[in-house]
Length: 262
Image 1 (cartoon, rainbow, N blue to C red):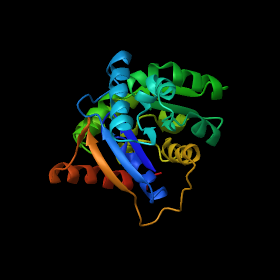
Image 2: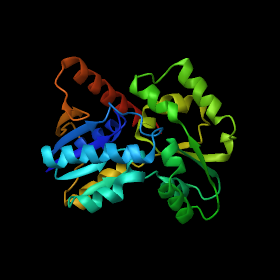
Image 3: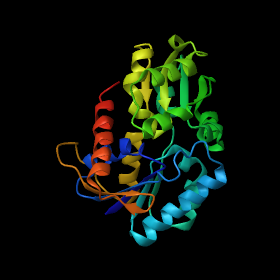
């Protein structure tokens, strides 16, 4: 099956790595809309327009048979519209609120995301459904997307930004931080260095790949050395340059290392 993953930038690579290992016999396309990143600080109408263009390219030109919207922001404002327009499996990202709350029903949970995701009706409906004890707090972290896109993951500026944003919260009272943007997974080592050890990470990556397999009628396999082939696109232009492909591979390598951090 020809499966496309779409993101505003390179954050979706944190999902792609898992998908390629779990579904090694499929063919993947990865579309990073780097002409318009970041989405989280754009207007809802702008993001919807970008998503429409990306889907038109992936389905009508590249013949994608299933699409993962590997971007929480795009999912929150466009997933329903895309499902009404295209009769293919379309899987979106959802902040792992339920997963985090189910793990500990007494301590608080900090849900992070882009400003659009944090303000969005979709996330607030999710919280209303699962947060009966009112344990969830929300924190937008827009600058992490900008840091990620320029590959600045571990630096004094990143650490100071996170310390400043976390300062209003007594993290010792929290059981988990929900990484509600795929870009945020790249910063798990920096976050771990300033978070209490008892505080864990929760993201929707594994669940998204499982949902993709279910909707597309595919069977995942235990992850091993085999990975599916993938073609990369930058806002509709195929990536062929050795330097840019090497940069993408460096993101993928970092994403794999971050998966090992609890």
